[in-house]
Amino acid sequence: MEKKLTLKELERTAWELRLKALKMVFHAKSGHLGGSFSAAEILTTLYLHSAVLDSDNPDWGARDRIYISKGHCAPIYYPVLAKSGYFPEDELFTLRKMGSRLQGHPDKNRLPGVEMSSGPLGLGASVSVGTALGLRQQNSDSRVYCLLGDGETQEGVVWEAAMTAAKYGLGNLIFILDYNRYQLSGSVESVQPIEPVADKWKSFGWRTVSINGHSVREIAEAFSIVKRGDTVNLPLIIIANTVKGKGVSFMENTSAWHGKVPSDTEMVLAIKEISAHLTNKS
Amino acid sequence: MKNNNPKQLRFAYGEALAELGESNPKIVVVDADMAEGTRTIDFKRKFPERFYDVGIAEQNLVGVGVGLSLTGLIPFINTFAWLISWRAGDPVRTLVAYAKTNVKLIGGYGGFSGPMDGATHESIADISVMRSLPGLAVISASDHEQVKSILTVIADYDGPVYLRLSRAEVINFHDSSQQFKLGKGILIKDGNDITLIGTGTIMSRVLKAATVLQSEEINAAVVEIPTIKPLDKELIITMADKTGSVVTCEENNIIGGLGSAVAEVLSENLPVPVVRIGIRDCFGETGPYDKLLDKYEMGVKDIVEAAKKAMRISRTLG
Image (cartoon, rainbow over all chains, first blue to last red; front, side):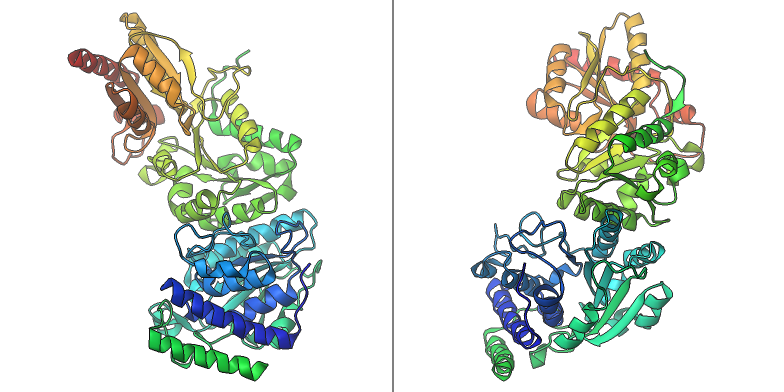
């Protein structure tokens, strides 16, 4: 069983892992930083505080299940998994190298801790619904979490899954929407608006809670809404308002850094900015 | 004892699945508003708590099934063969084949077997599509006894499977002692002059063609290949070596299906003439099932002609 980090530790850890992700992508010369930085606090809090997991026994039957449907946030997902103890941290710099267990998008058959291979958007929503059904059928208390991108909810299959979750009253299912408002080719608003987000999910039969997705306190509180073994029969979506590229000023609130690699000069600046946050948190 | 009452293959599937549900409590069924058609209705009636209907949403159908499998259950995922191959194509590729999940994809109404609905509802190349996915076993069932046997085997097999079924009425030519083996072909009838290789419900026509050929003193071997992938290469090579020419028969596009698979194996190992019977890279139309098969060159006489053609080419090649 993992040691739960305190909120203060979580805050600092999220910044440490952000720095790690930056260095990994710089080293690999490829990868998605914008949507990784927006999810840093969410994943850190989920893995190192809120979910019940055992990295020494990744297949432990009573664990909570976490699906990363927005698989392109691998640069932050992998450091979170390593920090949780699923594999050695020194493997992180093999990201996107040929033969590496750290594929461009997560592969469940290569890397321990990865519950499901992902990348093609929207599919994690359906998988998490199926898992929530299967766990409930087998009287498990485990919860199922699924991290979705905002642009990802333009995929029709997300809404198919949303309907099924409501139909079966899956109170053990928690979606987290990383609402960073940018996707590959522009703002979500300009590419294909998804608002009104909360109203859409409510009308699909979901409970919604809207939080600051960079506040570990708010994230932890939102995760505490669904307890293991809850008998509530409504699925929950946590709408986490985040900033794409969070932590590096020139990467923030733009689609330009969705999948771009920093130059040497940009890298110096980026390290400086993230490190400043680390100094503040120490 | 063979039970030779003609019955649609899907009914045999529905009954067998409900029966298997009794002995294997891990089996769950997912359907997309097609339970009456796919005949998972039998399972649903018996085990309502193990039956999930996601409505008309085939991507979600596959995703939900995969999610169920990740909890240790064994999902049978059902819809039309063409919907599971195309509409759910990416979930099948990513979540089933790439992720190597233990799910059983069941494609109903294979080939022209839902013919009155027309070309949009005919599955002309699901075998081709599914065969192109690494790690996915591809099976096509021919009769009731075989369906029963296939279900038992694939439920025990730990890995992804695509099973093509049919709405066509068939009679049994297997008996209950002939157990299906994954990846193994069946030598139904030995012969020296030509090998007819078929898969699925068209086997009844293949057998008739062999009889016609016999009446013309052509002794055809008949091989059934229920598992198109992994293919029983050994049996195919052995029989091609013995007879010197081959005809393949399937209710699927001649591009990418059994015919292609057999031609690939033989061209790399033992090049002999291979003439393919199947849907000739075209869409179908509305019409009575048997007449459609005849019109689209999958008739008994087409198989007989193909056999003669293959033998002729073989002789020319010397």
